[in-house]
Length: 144
Image (spheres, rainbow, N blue to C red):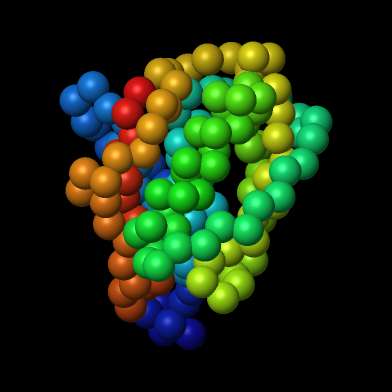
């Protein structure tokens, strides 16, 4: 098999940014890329090594563009963190017309070791979401 024909792996990383949190994520599908962005944000401020899900949350998230979908999905994360002190330890996303159906398996954020600043809001500054020959890539900045 030609290496160029292989499916790209998914992943994420934090990117240095002054006073804010910036993450990049990638995946073979739009949904994998979005899920990696969620993981990147959560892993930026809590250690999930010993985390166990205690509850589930579901949401249908719609938007007019993939960039707006990324923002809406991360705003959902910030909402549950602010209102219930919960973070997703796992997220499953299924494509639906105009967006995604999200299933979050949530843990108590207060019971997890803190490793960084808690995100407060998603910004539109240098927001990107694109499809290329190797799959999907996105980057986003959050206020902390």
